[in-house]
Length: 256
Image (tube, rainbow, N blue to C red; front, side, top):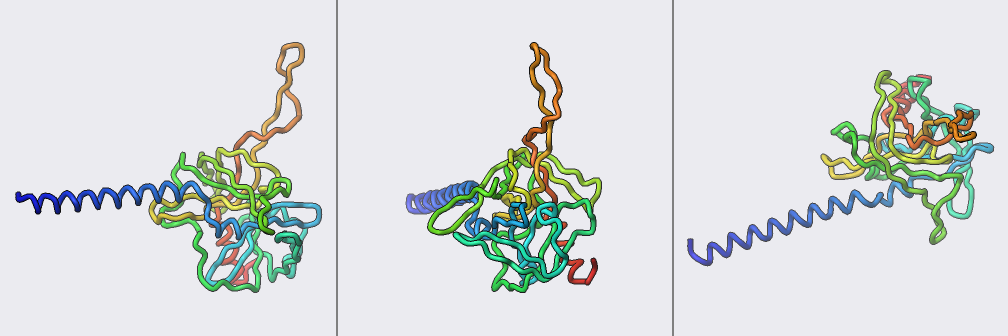
């Protein structure tokens, strides 16, 4: 092999290795920062004295608002009014119709709006891979106790990380997600997302319902005694985002 050919081969190998390294670094960095788009789509909502989180999704070019059902209980099923916090003001959002998943056990509700989206959102619903692997890192967004990031006249939700721990798919119409992650009151209705390694992008996978309670013990004369005090177990409970899509599809068919 002559010297010029050898140099050309080594140069090609070096260029390939550099490109591969940059690609790996880009992928790792992408997984460590939640995209701006989903931050902007996640809002603080208030219904009566109840405060929670909601986020917008697009389906066939139309905008829908998703949250936890218990956060907005008592609202009418059409022409509902939700107070949404945007910057320094609270705007009243008037919905067209309230949509529910097939199972009443699912703590998800979807509000149909009159808004349209110009192009599909970058952060879409669960990808072709079907969701994250067990043990994979996931993120969940929300407004604990109504607290938020305040910068440049805009408000952004808290961002927390967790581990995809388990699912309960006994009822396929009410699939429960269990995340090893410590959330707080106010996160209910917020989005859960993950990094899709197949599509190399973020995907929505669920809606925060709350957290699993545990009972606390106290020491009395050196002995542990059960109490009725409920504490956060550190296990986040959510429902699959697919049930929000089912609600939208039912609404398109005119089903209750």
